[in-house]
Amino acid sequence: MTAFENLSPSQKVRASLHRNVRGICTEALHQLGMDMTKPAMEIVAELVYKKLKIYGTDLEAFAKHAKRNTVNSEDVKLLVRRNPSLKTHLNKIQPSNPLLKEKRRKTIATTKLTTSSKPKETRPIEDKNDKTENTDTNELRESEIKDVGSNSKDDSIEKRMASEVEQMSVDDVVDLTFD
Image 1 (tube, helix red, strand yellow):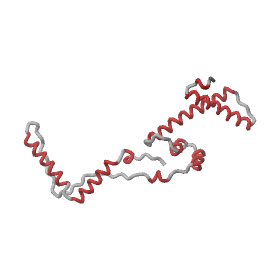
Image 2 (cartoon, one colour):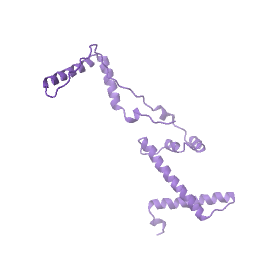
Image 3 (cartoon, rainbow, N blue to C red):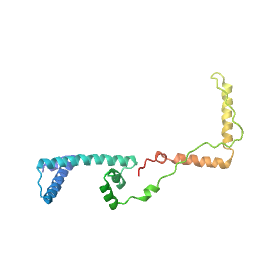
Image 4 (cartoon, rainbow, N blue to C red):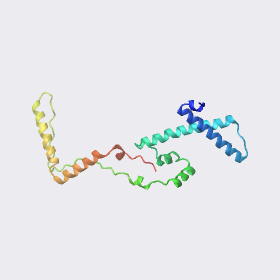
């Protein structure tokens, strides 16, 4: 058994990253006619590892914010938004999906529709000891509810709006998409 096989999965990833960074550094420096010490290559490899770890957590956060379990190309583009040349390169490889922007939904503000032409009666102040006024108040509330639903056209609109609001999620109400 080799020493590599005894490592944990995270240690294997780190070791293979260090090996690949050393290979890339060696090849790039050979083309430039330069040389680099082994400790300097290890520092570069460690910086790459730490930066990739930050990128991974950022990508997970972007996907989680969009209520997804999978990181997609839009998350990667959001990650590199401050690097114009890399962003341009990624847009050539994977153009933005225009269907995603058209997917936005309109929000509907709901208000209670009242069609009653009668002025509303004032409710009496309830006394904790007086039970008769409490029953009068309940009857008054029932009559107000009946007055609100008196027009069938307005009633159907109110029902449709209420069902649309129930179907809406938080994402539909608050749109935090940045362009």
